Length: 57
Image 1 (tube, rainbow, N blue to C red):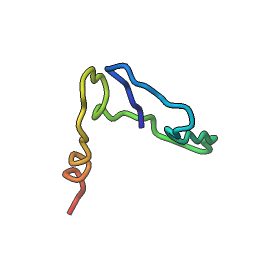
Image 2 (spheres, rainbow, N blue to C red; image 1 turned 180 degrees about the vertical axis):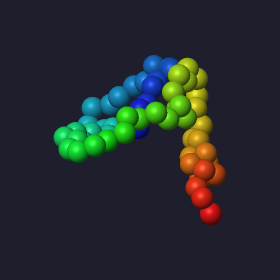
Image 3 (cartoon, one colour; image 1 turned 60 degrees about the vertical axis):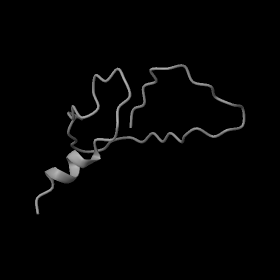
């Protein structure tokens, strides 16, 4: 998940914002190629429905 702020934000002391987890990739992998959320400059609603429409039935 990548979040890009188009407006200033205020972060308050003691308020948890997120958790970040890093791990080592082992074995073969595919590079991320989705254009779903790339190159946005404004408010972006969820595009989860695109994943649901792409599922085979």
